[in-house]
Every structure is written in C-alpha cells, then in structure tokens.
Image (cartoon, rainbow, N blue to C red; front, side, top):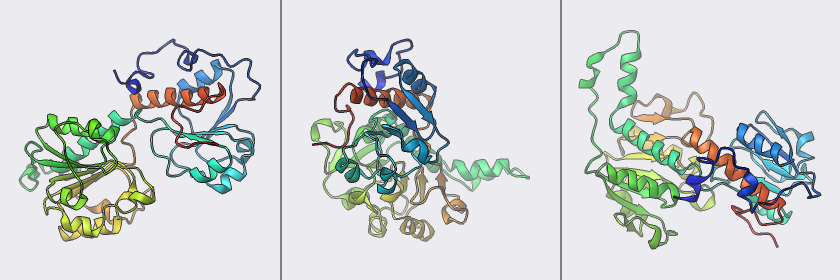
Length: 346
C-alpha cells in the first residue's frame, strides 16, 4: 500500500508521535506555537493538543498579532505568503502547505530567512484524479445543460435530442504532467478503454505507466488528443503553458480539463477558442483569477463545466492532509528536516 494511502486512513487511536520516530515533545524548549490561518480539521487540532502545542485557528485572513508569535504557519489555500507577511513573522521557522501546490509562497524569501516550506504530496491525488474523470464525463455527456433543462420553470424532458453526448471508450487522452495525479488519471482512463498519451519532460520513464505513450513535443501530443488534461504545478515554468498556439494544434472536437493551476492556461485564449469553436468544451476546477467574477464569459457557456477549486475537497483527502501536516511539524521539532520540505536550508 502506498504510504500516502496509509496516512490517516487506518490509524484511529494511534499517536502521531509514533509516525515521527516515537519521540515525545515535552522536553523541547521551543514554545511550539502553530498558526492555522483557516481550519484544517479537528484531527490536527487534537494531535496538536496531544503533543503539547499551542495553536490558533483563524478565519482565513491573516491576524498580525498571531502571525508575530508563531513558529509554524499553516496558511491554507487562499492566502499569499510574501515578503510583507514574512516581515511580520519574526519567529516563523516552518510553513506547512496543505496539499501539493505552493505557488502562493515566496520560497526564495523563506529560504533566505531560514524558514522551511513543506507540503503534503500525494494526500489528495486520488480525489483530484477522480474529479478529473468527473469533469471529463460531465462535459462529454453534456450533463450541465441537460440538468439545467430539467431544473427550470418549464422542464424540457426531451432536451436530450439537442444534447448528444459522446463516449470516452476508444478516445485518446493526453495527460500533461505525469506526477502522482497524472499517473492515477492514466489508470482511470485506461479502465474506460481510452488510449493514453502523455507529456512530461521531467518524468522518469520508470514511473510512467506502461500503456502511456510519452511524447517529447507538447503540440504533437495535443494534436492527437480528444481530451487534454493538465496536472502540472503553477509557477513561471508553466505560466500560460496552454495558449493560443496550443488551441490551434488541438482537434475541433477536443475537450480541455484543468484541475491543476489556473495560471497554466491563458484564460483569454481559452475563451476565444471556445467561442470560435476551436475546441468543443472544457471542464475547469481552477482559474487565473479566483474567485470568478460574475461577468466572466466562461460562466455563461453551456459547453463548459465549472467547479470552485474543489477537486481535492473530500473527507478522505482532508484526513490524509492533516496527518501529513503533522508529520512535517513533528519532524521539525525533532530537529529533523521536514520530510516533505520543498526547500533546502544551509
């Protein structure tokens, strides 16, 4: 069983200290003050209590008086940790980001100040992979406009004549990014009878699922796909990775799925491609600007399915994330490098 699948799923009653080498915290001299900008769940609060930590759970917005005292920060997904925030946190030594993405954290500034940044890789990969398939099915089967037709003041049961769906079986899916999530999507797609191609210049061949045909040129991979799904991190290297040139390469009946980061797709280019019929539809869980503005054209498009950055929002993922966060915290207070640290300190 994969390690990330074990964490938190079969451990009721086990002390988190057993995960972190069995050491207790009582004899450590640090105050051990943890600031969770938003709630991360009851489990981690219980674990913090059991291990002698002081903590404060906020409402999603930074409170400077709390920030100025904390040694450990759990920012959550909506806030940005930049130099301005770091200037207000003189005792901060560890930032733990729930989930995988940490593009809202200034890693360089943290490293220069001796602050570890850690995440919880693999904890939500199952949830995000399943959500990806849900988006694919919803767009392919035209579920959004069909559902609306039955939920209006004058339900149109025979709307099905206007909204013909398509099967996934036999179609080709291009997975951009073959990390934990991308590889899980590949297995799910194979179960639907899909042909799987992929693009990831950093993936080791040894970890790529055997049925996946890996392309070395992104545009060539896009050109053969009926579905394109994105599973890459945000940041400068992937900013607008999918753009006007990308849509020009894609099939006219292709569907784009994005459950990674909004910045990966040039939203203006996507809107133009959908309006011009360059692609057939899209399923989006992330956006360049979050939350969406009411006037965003994507909201009015019936061939687009939208969800509010919730692909990893499942009870199972939340439980694994809480244990993963606690593992990082205990490693740090045991004098170790946090096991999921994304930076190195000298």
